[in-house]
Amino acid sequence: MLKVFCSNDTRIEAHLQFFTECAGIKGIPNLVSRFTLLDHEVLAHHHKGVRFGRILDAGFFKITMHNTIRLGTRLLRILHAMHMKGFVHRDVKPLSVMCHIDDSGELQVGLSYFAHTERIDSPPTSNPSYQGPYQSLHVTRGGAYSRVDEYISVIILMMASQMVRPFDYNVNNHLSHSRKKEVFHENPYDSLTEDTMWLGDMYLMLEEMRTSNSFRHLEIVCAMSRALPGFDANTPITYHYDQHNGHLLID
Image (spheres, rainbow, N blue to C red):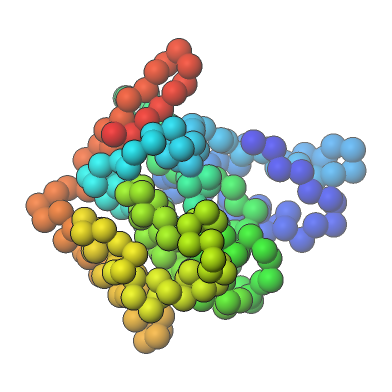
């Protein structure tokens, strides 16, 4: 993937810092090259696989709960590694999650589209992309982006994997986007199915961490493991893949 910047764009150095400091993290693409072309700066990084959003759109039905937990666990692991390096992605959604089949035949999960990636505790922004369905109420209201908000985006993505989409533009369209988030925040369980109530538990746990200013990654991972007691989320994600047309579906 090529990212082209004006020569005076401050995001160039921010991108270079991110790719340099997060090099080697599984699920983060490697920077390939930096060069100048027609007075513009160009950064090239690896870009592999199929967008998870495309997989969801092609599936018509929800993916299995086992694969939902496997996917969420892998995303939290990638984000935690990023956070330990001091960065937040700030745009986790199905279109920024990539899925590809590695040489051993295992489905791997990664992140892409780092246009909004910044240092943790960067000041708030009025960027309209933060009004999307996968952003937290806090960010929608203009609050500074934090690790809590990153994990809430993963929760909303897992909800979408189970066909629970209370924030989609065509759902409850008599409500404003912000109001949809407020309704969910007041009582997340009203929007969830019997099988996904545990996602409401995780959401409330994260908001409590925000209030207490005490982020606890392992507590969130343990909460996810309680969704299916005895299940190992590190087992391979199951899928169907057509090598001839590149069509990929997660079970």
